[in-house]
Structures are given as C-alpha cells and as structure tokens.
Image (cartoon, rainbow, N blue to C red; front, top):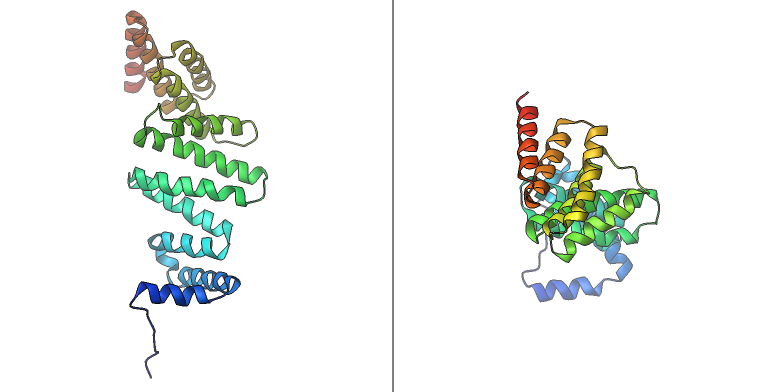
Length: 226
C-alpha cells in the first residue's frame, strides 16, 4: 500500500500566506472540518486536545462548540490547580457568551462561569481586585433569573461576604453573614454549616467580640467531631 503524501510548511510566513489566500468562508469550513476530525480521531482522549478544538471551532464560527471546549479547558485547569490558566480560559469563555442568543440557558451558563471564576480571581488577583468584585456582583445579578444549585448559591454567598469582610466593611459583612447563616440553617449540609460558623467567628474576632468568637469556634469543633 502506497504511503499517503503529506505536505507541511517549514516556515511560518509561508504558511500564513497560504492560509490567507483562502477565502474567509472556505477557511471557516476548513476549521470546522479539522475540529470534527480531531473529535473523531481522539474521541477517547479528547481532554488532551481542548485548546486545539477551541481554536478551530472559534475560527469556524461555531460558537457553541468553541465555548464548550473553552469552558471544559478552564475546569480541567482548575482541577490541576493551574489557576492562571483556568482564569484565562474562563475569561475567554465569558467573552464568547455574548455571541449566543440571549436566553435563560445563556444566563445559567454565565452564572456558572462567574461563580467558578470568582474564587479563582480571589486566589490570583485578591479579594480587593476589581475583577473579583465584578464576577461576584454579576453572579448576584444573575441569581434572580437562573436556576442555581445549592453549592453555587452558597459559594456566591461566601464570596459576597468576603468582598465586604476583606475590605473591613463589618456592617456589610454582618449582613452577608446573616444571609449565609440563614441559608445554612435552611440547608444544613455539613460543609455549609462549618463554613458559616467559620465566617461567624471571623467577624466576631475582627470586631473584638472574643467571647462570641470562642463560642463559635467551640461549636464548630463540636460539629466537626460529632
């Protein structure tokens, strides 16, 4: 069986000239075809080709697939604790969202992205960074029009608390703490209860209410142990 002939460009400028010589619509078709081939060839190892798929479907104009793979790449990076990479991918995903029709599905996807991005921004930029605040404020705006999971809602509450607390805005932090405690009371999952207790003693300690802080720490330890 004869070997198939394969052509490659050794020089980037030559490759660029050849690429630009193709009409725009033809280029988009080629990128779409390449994306489909990658999906078919690497169906069992698709996570190793997320960046390529994002690029090809982005260039083809297939926004839904480009967004899907960009999100997937961001969450994969987050699992590896590669926070800067995760931030880049999820931020790029947010920039793709406006290209989709404005509907409930898009709002839900944005809410999930913003609540995932918030803690990443906290870790890489800090609580006082404008980007961090924008992510949490936007998620709060979207909460009223989306169906969020309990974990997403709780993550948002903790994030909004952090925005106020780290800035030393104790009255605002107490109001967010109240919302968090009420949520944990309504949904007494162990992780929610312990985190709410942690926020409660943190505020008490910062306010110089040492006895209250001590009691809340004891409550948390008792809950944790038993």
